[in-house]
Length: 219
Image 1 (cartoon, rainbow, N blue to C red):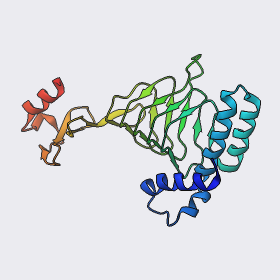
Image 2: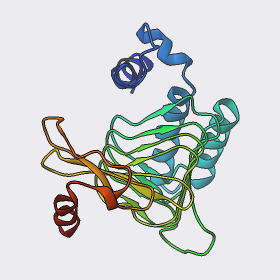
Image 3: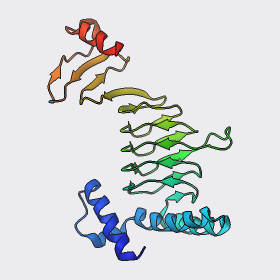
């Protein structure tokens, strides 16, 4: 694919994610743009078994951009890396459509696994800065991971997690309902699909809607 087509395609991705962009030509200044162009070329060589050539292309791009994407990784449509410096994506990592990573994110291995060694990200996953995701685990669709988290086990669809070790702070359900949790894991409040908040409690012991909370947990 030619440079102009790449610019047009990536501009459509960037303008949805980064309000600071003012023209499509700025896309060429984004480190991720150069890294992804190199990745696609390297990945094509990797699939043909030209492993040395593939790694040579990816390592050159890593030195130029600060983004290291192994040519064996599988990356879906509309992928975006904001800023980019320090991002590492391992060989057996798989990334779905419409995913976004921030600077300093590692999709790495634990050193204990063989074969599938790196994480799988579903569709519409966002991983914020300086987060480490390790091992052959899955972050399912619509997951959000807060900055500086360490993730070493699967995260269910629609969950927002933070910390090290991670804890769930929100859960988005398929009907549009959002459950927000206290630090201890109890439910703080629930927001329905219309944005209406049901309950607002820092401590579930004093929760006026305790029955509602318990029935939601059972689901």
